[in-house]
Structures are given as structure tokens and as C-alpha cells.
Image (cartoon, rainbow, N blue to C red; front, top):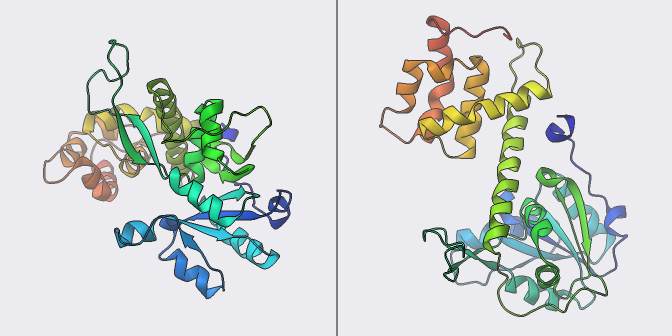
Length: 313
């Protein structure tokens, strides 16, 4: 499982970016910052939101911001920012900033099959009904999940006037570079649409990605007194915790990561401990919120009762 749990992310360097045709641009994910627009201004870098003013200020602040990488100083500053986490997607567009800005705004939303409707997959002979959702193309992990699923026509729609798009998506293979080609169809107009089969493949990829993040969380939080914990054990602990998490109604990734930690700490015994299960299911709050305070509660009860941790402690 070394490949799966590898935590060293590819470093984004000015030299890597300068291999791309100029002019170069970066789209930064505001959700990773308190106020990326203001933070960039303190560095003397102007940015441009891909969301128009007049809407929700919080949504706009946490959304995408386009930066023109017009000189080496800006490129170096943005690389330093991008190497702190998956928050940047890089574009090469010969037609310039305004053309790229307009194009990226046209892919801010995407159509996906409406999962609120039963059997909405085209298998019953009925036309698939779609809903419009936000397409977070400024998140490199989102692009890392979606780009491999696209048809050539869909890929051309995403690239639009750009010749290259590059990003470091740690949950989907690290550094990725995609480019246009002569035999790529002309980009179609209209909203990009994912079909039911593509959505099923996307769910599979996202589930694997979520498992990777949970496994990395466990690996980074192994107690010092544990021994014999390797990648294979951590991956197995991640998978082994899923059934009991489902039974307890723990749905969020953060909650499931915490539950996987409790299961690892107890050598799998927490799932069978009535006190622990009742604590999570007591109805006073959602299971995901209850599991926030579960770790110390579970450890205390496991140490004082008959569910003491087993062989790997």
C-alpha cells in the first residue's frame, strides 16, 4: 500500500510551470484561505474572482480567483502558495486573460443526473433528468477525479481556448498535465454534462479517494505506544471500520475518519461495545457530531471495561 498511502506531494516549481506556453495563469481555491484576494494584494498580486459581485459574499470569497502569472516573481509567489495544499490549477491560454476568464466562468456549473429522482439513469426507457450544480474546477482533486472520465468532446469543452491545464491532485495520482491536440473536436457550446455511467465511475473514484484520506489520517495519528503498524494495517483498518460506521449512521468523511481511529485504538472492539454504540446513537445529536467527542469517551470506557485494546498496543 505504499503507493496508496504516499503522503509526499509533487512539488510545483517555477521551472515546471515555465515549460508551458505563455501566457500562464493560475486559478486559486479561496476555500483554502481566510481571504485569498486580500492575501494576494499584500504580495502585490492582483486577482480576479470567477464569481460576479452581488451574490453571497462568503461564497465569492471561498470561490475561485484567477491570477495572471505574468512574471517570475508572481510565479514564484504562487508556487509557494500552491505547495501548501491542493489549491491551484494552472492554465496556458494564448488568447489571454479576458478570454480565459470568460471561458472559465462558463464551466463554473455542470449538469449531472438528478439523484433525487428514482431510477433516473435511462435504464427504464425514460429520458434522464439533470440538475445544475457547482463544478469546482479550481480544486485540483476535483479535476483529477473528473478529467479521466470525460469524452474527447467533453474534454475539449473543459479546455476551451486553453492549450494546457496542469495541477497537483494528491488524491488522484499527483501532478497531472493535460493538453489539447490537433484531432480534438472543437469545443461545444452549452453546459458541460456528465452522464449516469460517468457519475457511477466518479462515485467509485471519490470513494477510493475518501478512503485514502482516512487512511492517511490514521497513519498520521498512530499513537506512539502502538507497534507493528504499517501501510497494509492502516489500509485494512480503514476498510474494516466502514461496516460499523454504516450501521451507526456515521456519514461524513471526518466522522468516519474519527470512527476508524476509535476502531483502530480498540483493535476493532469498539463496534461491539454497547456503551460505545449507545453513546453514538443516543439521539441527542447526529452520529457524526457525537463521534467528535467519542474518542476520549471510548478510550476511557475501553480501558475501564472488558474491551481493552488488543495485540497491537
